[in-house]
Image 1 (tube, one colour):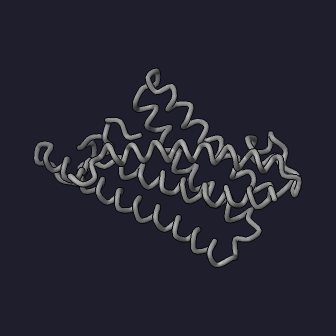
Image 2 (cartoon, rainbow, N blue to C red):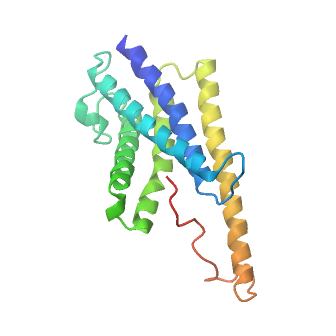
Image 3 (cartoon, rainbow, N blue to C red):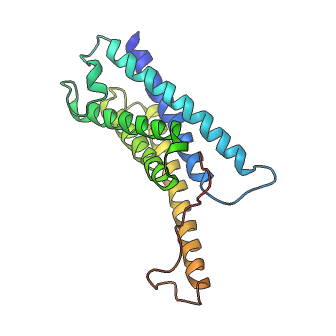
Amino acid sequence: MLWYVNRGTGVVLLVVFTLTTVLGVLAMGRSTSVWWPRFVTQGLHRTLSALSVLLLLGHASVAVVDEFVDIRWWQVVVPFGGTYQPLWLGLGAVSLDLTALVVATSLARRWVAHRVWFRVHLTAYLAWLLGAVHGIGIGTDTSRSWLAVTNVACLGLVAVVVTARGVAVARGLRARRLRSGGGHADEPGAGAWPWPQGETS
């Protein structure tokens, strides 16, 4: 029974964490719409982020309590120290640790410099990727068609959004360089930090 709960929370976590990541990328954009203002994206991002953390804690707790495999409590936070599927379990532990770091800096944001907070916050994307790879590698039912489609859809969605955001940033940086004294787009040193400095999550 606990094994099904563990796998279920893992799959739901992947979907919710994917949506959180996508909204995080979208929230960094400056574009707004009358029908979908930026604060709505940011609000959904925060809500799904909190849900992702709760699901992650539940998923890790069930993995420890479940006796189907031998996973000790410290193995979910100390990377690559387990005996069961050490590589895949270790990736999950790194994902959890990075998520905990992001949460900690977000809770202490008023005391953390924005640039530091922002750079730490970017590790959430790595946490998502490692978590996805962890689920694919450690899952005994990964080959099932519905789960394979879910994994591909989540990976593909984030890849598309991140690529689109990267293209937008590159275009914006090029425009800033061209506006800064009429310099060429390939001149080094021109332009500013390409990410917005306001609140993004």
